[in-house]
Image (cartoon, rainbow, N blue to C red; front, side, top):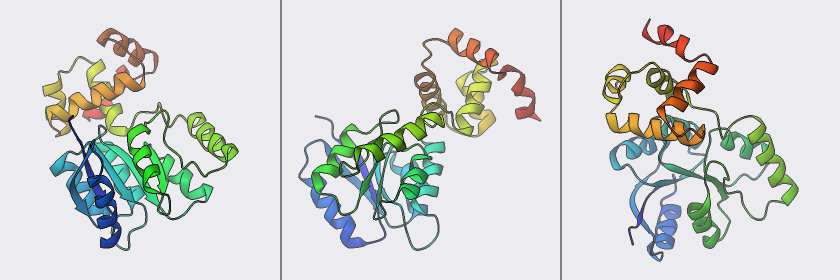
Length: 221
C-alpha cells in the first residue's frame, strides 16, 4: 500500500510528537515533515508536496493557520487540508470553511476522529467533528454551499481557466503565471472536477457563457 504523505503543523512540540505517534501506528499514513508556523507550512507544502497537511489554526506569530491554508490552497490545490483547532464556536468554524478545507477537528477529539477526518474529508463533503450537533453541522455545510465555496474557483484557478479557454497551452500558461507546468496541470484538473466538465470544449463553452473569454485582455495588461 502506498502511504499518504502527511505534514503536521503546530507550534507546540508535544502536540506534534503526539500526532506523529498516532500516525506511526497507521498503515496508510507517513509523516514526512513537521512545522511550527504558518510560514513553515507554506514552505513545506512547496518543498515536500505532501498528500495532506494537518494544521493548527492559532499560532503565536507570523501567518496564522487560516492564512497559511489560503496560500497553500492557492498554490497547491492538490494538497488536502485538515484544520486543527481548540475553538468550537460557529464563527471560527465558518472562517476555516471559507478557505475551502477538507476537514476541521478539535484538539481534544480522540485519535480515531483525527484519522477519520484525514481519510474521508473532501471539498464537497468536508469532515466536521462528530460531537457538533447535527443541526449545527447541517447549517454550516448549507451556508458554505450556498456561498459557492465548494464550486468557486480560486483567483489562480480563474486565471488558468481564462488562459485555457483562450487556447494557451500548459507550457505557455506556466510561463505567463510563473508557475510550473505540473502546477498548471493540477489547476486544470481541479477546474474540470469542480465545474464538472469533461472536455476542453466543455471548458470553452463554460468560459464563453461566464465571460471569461473577454477577460484575457485584463490579465495581459
